[in-house]
Image (tube, rainbow, N blue to C red; front, side):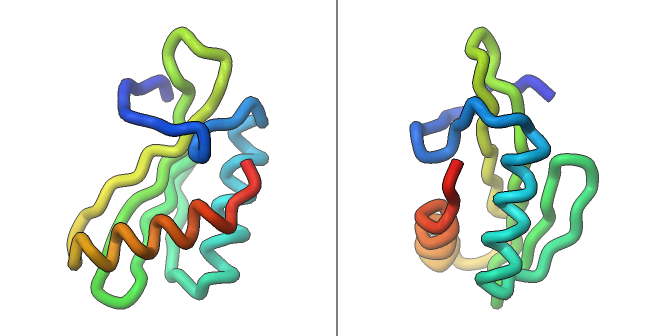
Length: 91
């Protein structure tokens, strides 16, 4: 789906959504993050942090990006976990 959200170079790619989502799942599995998938949304839980990762098409750009949303848990732990996960992704 096409959304408006903040994004950075490290969370965007010209790859197909399927390839991006496969990379997300690879990194989540390697990091032992519990996750359930529905479409291009991964609902994740790691320790006390629950969050979502969604592959979205960026409007007016021919790139796809990742949208992250913290559902619950410590925001400091969420920030560090996401930094680690994004660093391991090759988008």
